[in-house]
Image (cartoon, rainbow, N blue to C red; front, side, top):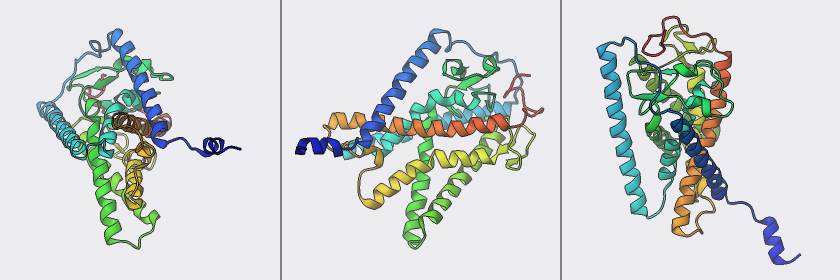
Length: 316
C-alpha cells in the first residue's frame, strides 16, 4: 500500500464540512418550502382576526414585538463587530445565523395537533405546515405563524440563553474545580430549565402563547389555558442551549476549535467563513429537529385543549 493510499484510507471527514453540507441542505429545503408556500398565497392568507382581546394584553403584545426587534438588532451588531474584530466567522456568528435559520421549523410544534398556540393580535401569516413532509394537522386552516415574536424572525435571541449557560459553566469551573462533569452539566441544564420556565411563564401570563396539551404529573395549572408543561420545558433546555454550550466548553477547555469548525482552519478565508456559517445552520437545525421529535411525542400523549382557552389564542 502506497503512502497516498494509506492517507486516503485513514483520512476522516472534516466535521465542519459534514455540518456545512447538512446546513446547505436545510437552506435549499427552506428556499423551496417558502417559495411554494408564498406562491400559494401564504403571505396574504390566514385566519380571520375576529376575536376580543383586552387593551392591556394587546399593548403588551406590541411592546414585546418592539423589545424583540431591538434585542435582535443589538445582538446582530455585537456579533458582526466581533467577526470584524477577529477577521473571521466566530462561533457566536455561526450560532446566531443557525438560530435565525430555524423559522421554517415553527409549524413542527403542531405537526399532529395544535400543541402551541400564539397571540393573534400580533402580525402573522398562515402556517406553512401543510408544505412540510409528514405534517398532518386537521386544524391547519386555524393555525398561524407570528412574523416576529414570540417566534418567527427573532429566533436569534435564543443566543442570549446560550451565553447565560456559558457564563455559568465558566464560573462553576473556576469556583468548583473539583466538580465532576455530571454535576456540572446537571446544574447547567437546571439553569437552562429555570430560565425557560421564567421566560415561558412571562409569555403565558402576557398572553403571547399557550400550551394546549398536558403531561400528567409534570404540568403546572393543568387544564387551564395558562398551564405550563415542565417536561416540555426540560426538553427545550436539554436540546436547545445545552448542546452548543457543551461544544463551546470542551473547545475552550482543550484550546482547540469548536466541533463544528474543526477542519475549516486550512480553508481559504472566504470559503472558511461560508463553511462555518453553514455548519452553524446544520448543527442548530439538527438539534431543533430532535427537540421537535420529543415535542410531538408529548403532543400525541397530551390531554385535550383547555375549555377556557381565550379566543385571541384559539378561535371558538
